Length: 242
Ligand code: GLP
Image (cartoon, rainbow, N blue to C red; front, top):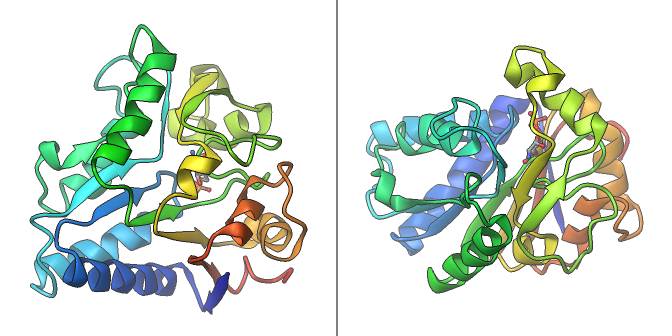
């Protein structure tokens, strides 16, 4: 596991956007796995600036989603599909056809999970999976004690994660869904390169446990220690307990 310490979130965004650029130069139709939350936004901003500046041609790049809320109505602004379309697909000038994600509104959620795992494999697998990290060490929506071999499946959110994410729902925890679909930890580990970005003091403990603690299901991000090509990009605040 490679750990890169950068001065601040913007520098982290720049470093990771550069990694995406170099991937796309090697593989123009790369499958880029994107994460939601606040942390990855500087990556998308830096990448969109490079695209606008003609630094890289992303017209053949494909984008796939890491996780999704279950049960939000189609088009809800905080569904992760809406967020990825708004924050990644549109700013990069990609078409909606270049984008794939699990169907959080499916009647048979389990079948939707299996279909998504199969679709990722049929697409040739994820080339670079970007991750954030929850304050409890979760990746995607794999909450503590998720199996390290898990596949895409339905999960129930912890109270802590619902509290953390309430800010996206006007601060009202009652609006935060209880259930989600998430790529499993086993699914995430199949990406050819996994890049985790963590910024801010609030992530320092989770980062320390993930990078320096034992590999354990209670800290889902510690599973990245098992990956042959994992990069953890942290700002100085998130690195403060390393
Ligand atoms: C959610 C997402 C995760 C993300 C986490 C942290 O739980 N499912 O993918 O890493 O939030 O979000 P933030 O970056 O806003 O702290």
